[in-house]
Length: 283
Image 1 (cartoon, rainbow, N blue to C red):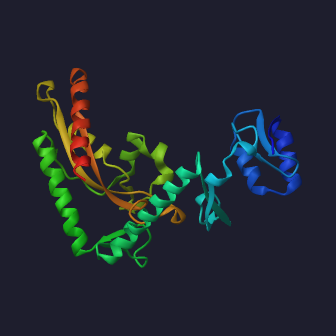
Image 2 (cartoon, helix red, strand yellow):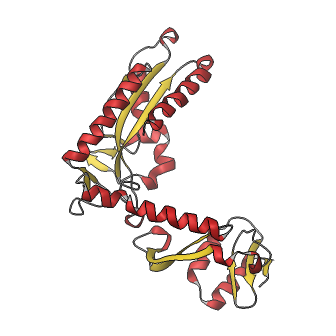
Image 3 (cartoon, rainbow, N blue to C red):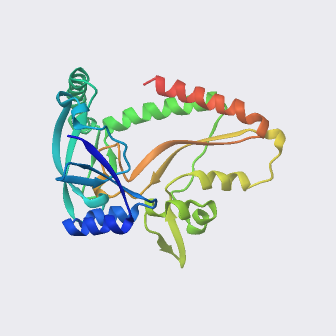
């Protein structure tokens, strides 16, 4: 079947969508900021809003390299306050050989699903009574984590980093000054009132390290300063997006900030990449 491309005005696209009674497509149309609006279709039976491009015909698609995988419920746009829809998962490859190899990888990955292994080996859990996306490290998992953290600290200290620790909350004005609140407010938890001041649980560590640097007069002769932190941060994720340890609301990240001169920048970047390689290749 040929796949056709059509350019229409925003008004025409809206008329067609309303004609077939698709309110969700109207929301998608409203989110498209460019014009003209492009529509792709197959025959007279199916069309949809799409930026494209696509192949010229469905006959160009290797049908034996396409497979439906599963069906699951999903909130519209990941918002648990919106309608529950059905999401169809599928995968497409260049040829059947690639599809077969992919299925094999998925079978092996399923055997190693960290959510299953975490429970089976008593490493960690997510207690729904405490809230979704919040990880509890059990004694065995904590032992593994401590070993990793000890290795991290040793490598950073060897490379000239000082280890620092910062609070978990701060006055909201700090996040406004840093710009985080303007850009990432939707990914931050709601604020809390502390003695008539507004505080924010931290979603990242950057402003804290900057405050520490400003705490005293510094000399360019002392640069660079390399400060590393295993900083625990909290970010708002919708419940429909949470997934084991991969998508959570509270996590500890390998974080660091380097204060240096412009002429030191290139060598510092190279050293960071080497340190990253050292740590990641160990695992």
